[in-house]
Amino acid sequence: MYWNKEIETISRKDLEDLQLKKLQKALQAARTTPFYKKVFEEHKINIDKITTLDHIKDLPSTSKNDLRLSYPDGMVAVPRKEIVRMHASSGTTGKSTVIFYTAKDIKDWADLVARCMVATGATSDDVFQNMMGYGLFTGGLGLHYGAELLGCMVIPAASGNTLRQIQLMQDFETTIIHITPSYCLHLVEVIRAEGIDPYALTVKKAYLGAEPYSEATRKKIEEQFGIDAYNSYGLSEMNGPGVAFECTYKNGMHIWEDYYIVEIINPETGEVLPPGEEGELVLTHINRQAMPIIRYRTRDLTRLIPEPCPCGRTHYRIDRIKGRTDDMLIVSGVNVFPSQIETVLMKFPEVGNNYQIILDRENNLDRMHIKVELYSKLFHGDIKEIERIKNRLKEALKALITINPRIELLEPGSLPPSEGKAKRVIDNRML
Image 1: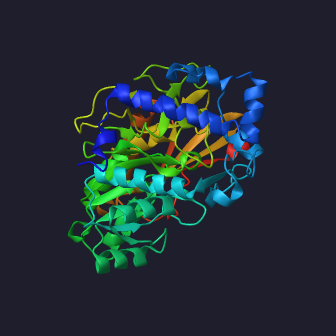
Image 2 (image 1 turned 180 degrees about the vertical axis):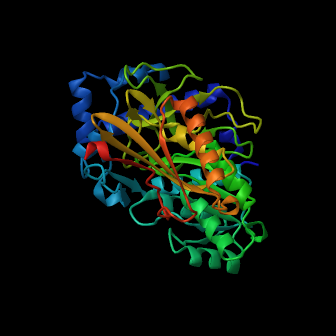
Image 3 (image 1 turned 135 degrees about the horizontal axis):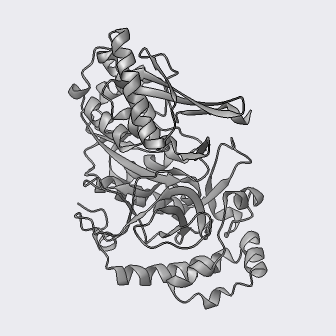
């Protein structure tokens, strides 16, 4: 099932021809902005010589810091009167970054999201409950407009207020939810605590995004909720959600290459890597009027999946986001991604839905402490059984990350629940 079969199944040759035309147009627009005018001059870039897609690697990359330095509108390529909306990052890790949109940009974004939803089997018969934050964050409004374009009935619930979410799901027979994976795990716990069978609800699909998570977590959500969970990928610099999405085969996310030129690079050298090799995702938005962004370094680690998808879509897929280059933890000299730890934890049926990784430094040595909630149905308070689970977890983690963490098993509900993006890592070494 397709939203736009002609473009979703376009031949690679025709797709690349289309990309080149759009890239050249995007570069012309970028050159009108104060930021790219200066960058092109400094690097002596003649955009008229960009005549093949391969030439894109000759262009300088754009970073989040570039966006911050261009605050608020140093990358805008249209007159202010043509802008109809802006979104901004929270600014928790530095100055906010702002993205602007024309009316066409908003319409195109909704069209992309509708394309994503149809790829999962969504139709105008669905009731879509959006549990992502609205406002400056792109997660709420991004899916909202796409679902409306598809013809779904949209419930703009936003995040939090879990009992109210459940009531809405029951009263309006929600069939699709959009939610962070950590909040979804909390939601299903509350559903069961209220004496409701999750399988008896009308929810059939969940779109999960806004934070990295493991395949084991997806399976846990699907098993506990009785739904299909789909990976959603997006970032505000490239619009928001709708950049890449899984189809019903759930084997990588199709990245919509008629809007984005995708590269995977070695994050240390900048070398472009061939399909199949893991590295940092770099994206060029070739279809946005208000704010073209060239070779944006996402910091997200993934790989291109070169094999064709059984669904018939010809756009490349990207693998599950492994983590971010700036999320990698170095513990006692060992590189560790939180997603590796989550993968181990979630494979244990005795483990519940919430955990926390705490890093400290004692006598100049790094220490890792992992707090793990036990699964309520399997928590009996048996000390010997708890010690057995703890030892199995330690062995499994040591085998994967070569670190011997301290494991603390907790009663269900001991850790703060997530109603948005979960804070899984507390690194006290930087304090």
